[in-house]
Length: 291
View 1 (cartoon, one colour):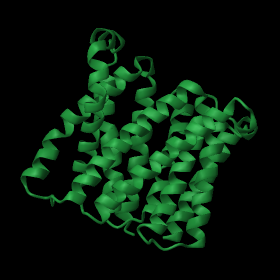
View 2 (cartoon, helix red, strand yellow):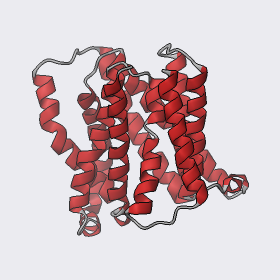
View 3 (cartoon, one colour):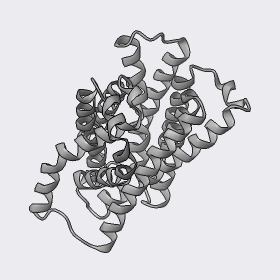
């Protein structure tokens, strides 16, 4: 695995944390903001996608089209599942379960489907990443998972994490085996989300416009940064980085996000959140050693 591939995953983690920070500041706009950011993403990356198509850097086949369609559907299901989980339970329950389950299942998929080698260091790193995610998101209050009220959050977190794993494995197969250009895979997946959301958002145009007042620049920023982070991840996969490394390593965004919250938003960081950052970083180092 090349140093450049590792660098791409690290930059992707910072990019992911950055657009999440921006999106958090526009959270009151809800689904209207998601639709707007998807629209700007499609617009911003359209010239790149058209250039790739025009230069013939894609091989058309039923399998390629099936992977692109599957990626779009799974990404949409992921967005809806995550939103539903947040409606029914606390973020501090849903988010760590989803982000921890996603790389865990993705790595297993890398072992079983893409036949990536298994190492003790790699497995140890994966376990540390998952533990670090949980510690950062819950600040060590693991007993919250045992309460009856957390059952819905855990259930939707598991569903969301499974969808994260599904699109990670599908997209990994698309760029590593079928050699689909990362920008095309991401652009068409985003276009599918827009197509499915349009019939719901169109009748609510006036309300959505009011909700987006003062937030358009945030939508442009998220539209530019969100695809970029994922394209970097897919590019690292296409360069030969194992899925069992990339899936957990990209969760460094949790650590970066926690540090952003501490230094940029003035949020308090308890000892367990800082311990979680250290554990997650140790896990990523172990993953690098294991590959």
